[in-house]
Length: 153
Image (cartoon, rainbow, N blue to C red; front, side):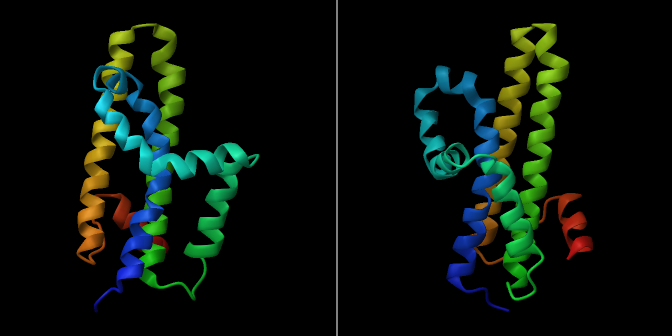
């Protein structure tokens, strides 16, 4: 089945939510390589939305979950990508909490920078893969995450 272009574009835009939450991990890389700051530009609308509305992240989460994922009128392709994006976002948020709780108190900036940089580069790689797959009209197959998504839908 051929996926319409507007659904492919919307699927890519949904992944801006996990991307916006992974941007803070790149603070060190953005200082070393200023041109990498261009990667922040696509996530800027999400940053503005989260800051302008109280509990913006939570509201955005519930809008996607109730309005897209649990809505049977929305095409399966969009529901699949929305749920996968939300699961990626949950993983990123949990990793950021783990980083603050476990590594930050140690005070080793080298470990903190290495872990943060690795997370950002990993997420960038995942985003590139997701964009390529969605442009081709395929469902991005991320190990473990895709299985969980298919079980829920």
